Length: 399
Image (cartoon, rainbow, N blue to C red; front, side):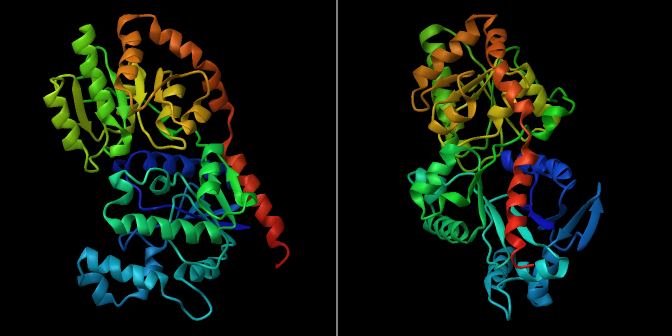
């Protein structure tokens, strides 16, 4: 059976989405032992249609997609016009098939697609659909899920269509499954739970960053979306300095998604700008170094149902202080330190423990050891193979 595994156009600057997709790419080498994998990606016109790397076949689907549009339109149109045109041709029906992805399936003998990210497509070929979160439903007040209005409408239409049509729906934990069932008319029997694996760079080398790190610091790797809740950490640092005379440094990595200016402004107003370090993009090797030398990782996100950095922190033996949303509690269990994501005083009290007790880090790492062992023992690829096994039985009825 041939499986088309569809990746987005991914770069490291895209944060957690990038690292998990690169990790999945590595896991596919194990799946390849049973099923033939074809990795599909959006490579524009700078990559060839087909190439082979490390015994995996890569197909640049844009080489097919762009053929649907007049050459002059693709070459000369601005990005916004071109993308609008692509969307039109992307979804326009064709004789005997709904989209170019069906044509690709016919051309390459692909039996099923697996969308490793929440793609928005039309096709008749069976597919597995990955849902990382439905934040627009769970937290519609946040601007990144609602403003401009077409963003909410677009997410809603996409989820409703793709979830209904998917052969299987893949999510990370029971909380994610429950959120899907509570918000959409979806058959429970279609949902499969496959938690995130350990990110690939955790196994690699580490490299000291080119910028200066404080002697002691907390770490928060997250892009600057409002729901990532950097403001709670800034206020907690202010509280520690004002109420307890503690100077707690924090490293913020990640790209700006519209909220960084607000965080910088509040750090200045609260008088803690000297404690907040905005590093921007860092390499995976530098990321690992920052984890392993931090007092603790603070993961303040208010949106789940599960996330990738908490896994990285635990595996790299960095104490984890994490918001107590239901998905995080399910994902992490009892071995980590939880705090109320809306209560900066609660967070400050948890941070103070690591600032004032030199043994606290070692004790926290020891407490996380059971969780770390379970992460090491977990086999992501076997969960994917089980889903493909189910589909293979199903497909035998029409072969």
